[in-house]
Length: 178
Image 1 (tube, one colour):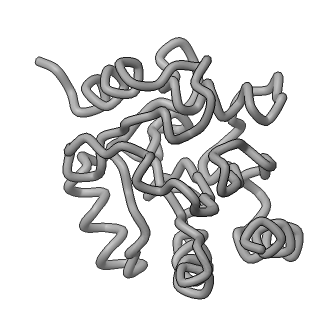
Image 2 (image 1 turned 120 degrees about the horizontal axis):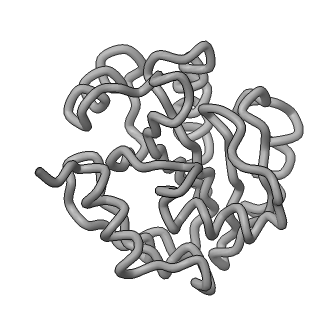
């Protein structure tokens, strides 16, 4: 039996590879399981976040949605990628994740199918993000963030401990939107 996680990883490998030139070279399965080319977000500033429903950082969904609503008209898109890599804190199906995010945090930003963000089965998108941020360290926990510029290249990586409304992230985000 092929899982949605496996399908999402295979789709990402098919279109995007760690050698991709920009984030727009990737196609990922959205939360409903439909292939979504990230070219859809070309010219936008992206905040890419690995998310989880049962984590101490889960309340960051509220701040992510607030930032999305505040800056969306200026060209920001938050992209949520559920991952179950840390303490089994995202055990649910895509449907359960979507229901949770919508009901508890009124999430309207794009959510994608569950993927792996570290280890041998790391999604090629996250392999690329890590390479682009010149990072030699793996994603350390849920809610790690990557700021991607309008040109599709990674600007900066932020720790999971740094909340989305932190002044550093907001300042960097506003600069990228200009």
